[in-house]
Image (tube, rainbow over all chains, first blue to last red):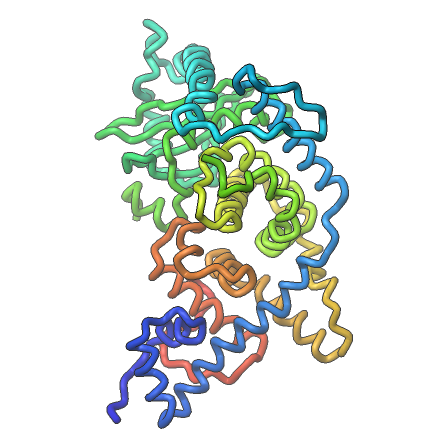
Length: 261
Length: 179
């Protein structure tokens, strides 16, 4: 029959059983008269089998007791929090017995934590206003000066610095953490500011036209190390999940989004 | 709107070995992996309301863990080399394989997987080790299926070559390790 050319992706999908019926039939037919095709398919079958044989046994390795305990503790604490916010019909649960509760309605699930969260976010944004304002030389007219970043050095940094690098602006080190798209498709960047004095700030800004709007800024006390303290990153995480932030962009995607060469 | 009938917190402990396997092969260090697993569980518990019933729990957890990993890589990129890089090569330490030759092959395969660029390694782990479909892997990684397929095909050809799996007849021009 006719000798069709199949690319690697198609043959791999065939080997993985992910190919549509029509192309599968075409390949099966071609295999009858094309040894090279069979060798190529075998490579994909074999590579999967070998990778699987090499790494799957890792699952049999015992999970360190400390890790299991730590996760169990988090689960227990999460349940306590959940019960605390539930309706008063709730019976007091003992440590290891969780009272069965009817499924909450969707609206209730959302409101149980977004309300206090929104309030706390407002607090940290206002709190961080003075920080950014004082640092980046923005007018400290009122609590809302955070609407946009105006410092030219900061704008240049956000426009042109790839994630994973540090830039020093004055006595402040800016660490670009990641770029992502928010739920509305705007390009956003998460970064940390570390001042020589030891205090730091975690912030999320999103591009609006030519400028960067500050969406979130969480001031964090000095942690001594390079890492943002857990409290700050939890707030950022909570914020990111409410805005339906996408996965971090890869280096190439980020370059493209920022319009870098 | 929690999971099916089983909540995220009910599933986490049972899923730890899977999560840890993915983390170890992703970051090639057990110490880093355990920290990462713990952080992923913490984040999963904090956002368990966002887990959609009827979707794959493993894919959801892998996505959380992988995003944390990317964040961490970016945060530490400028902080010099990681100290744990030395225990990369003992990743295959628990295989029940007794035949010395087969064991050697597995080690060379594991070493070859270690050497893959991150983009290729993570997709290989998700599909060939964790058995996610292309579509599920695409969702975990936040990239199109076409990209999953091209990275995965390159990863497997590089792996085959490095581990001497097969004398593949190669008809695509580039065989470099780059994505």
